[in-house]
Length: 256
Picture (cartoon, rainbow, N blue to C red):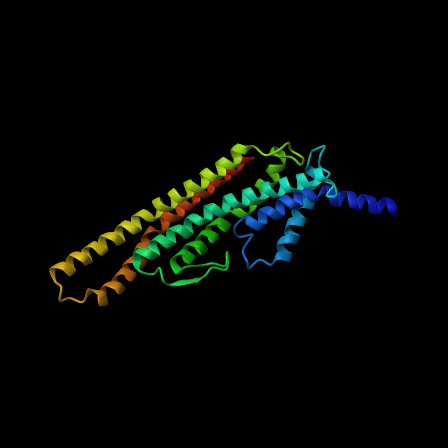
């Protein structure tokens, strides 16, 4: 009985590293970190994946002793690696939120905000629409499976007990944030430019015919025009988001 307990304890400590990395990934990655997914479910998912991955880990330092300083350092490294992978995915999803906010401000719906259940923040309804569409596209492409596959591949690139993180990985992650802001501007540019031209047309009409009350009719026209532009530009936005998802998995591979 004592031998059996020791073996169980040894197996749990061996799976501690994968569990920490998976937990940090699921805490930061979109879809997995949604508030609609309860924390116990997320924890059980991380534990199940850790137990499945542990037998395939080839590392002499697979054992983590959490009661030593070296073991705590390794555990902290595992949390950092998982959080970096999840944060890179979160930045990719922030592109759609930024696109929706830019379009909502242009069409006059910037004040129409609702609570986003994924992050607990108030976002415009257009940004929420893009976020839901992005989540559906991510699941339809099997992105949740690719996340788990990337987690499994991370233990081949960065096995347990690896000798420190590459400082260039943090630089790549910071560069990725700047790239995501540029992607958001490019995806929102056609819709924002079209709405700007409509506003300029209203301005010219107001100057030529001041007696017209364009404020009463201009606001509904901007909203309907903006909704039409959203529908027409949606395929291009989805294609751009798919390209962003492809880039983020390349980035995760480069970080690892």
